[in-house]
Image (cartoon, rainbow, N blue to C red):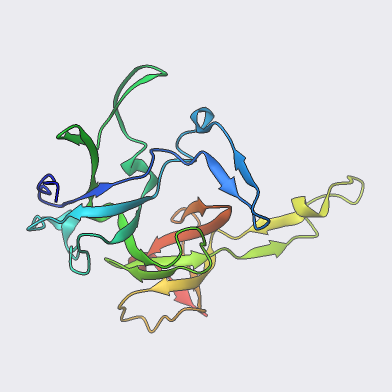
Length: 219
């Protein structure tokens, strides 16, 4: 078995299949390829396989409540987009030094701060809807709530119906949540400040990630 780098404090070491998503697969089986370089933050890789876990987490205020418990080598995890989309330097378009990339025995690895890990993932990697999520460190994975707003535009302006569909950023429906003292369960609708959520996308399926501490109400 190849030796892997030791995870530094507060960080998990992962391997990724590629730095950016460059294709999307439709239900029909058709695969569409695209160039992610025009907006790399939108297409940064969100998935990795754990190679090494930290021996300890720093006892500092901003790491309070964070733990590597529940993460082991071989686990597939989801993490924030800026794990990959974070540069040390970019002299030109084709010459980029990534902040979190580590080269070990000519093999690329990535360090992921424990604060940026959302969950471990189980199931078919090609199907978002069929996956199971074990949420970590107080994060909540939610499905989007989309509403039809007939009063968005004047009746004198003809627009497609799709443009009248609005994604709510102040509430979402819980898809997966870990241990919590809020009595929140999958299927519940949670409310939060519209400035809080981050919207992500995996294979055309959009979802929201929020922290339990940002939940204002449950319905």
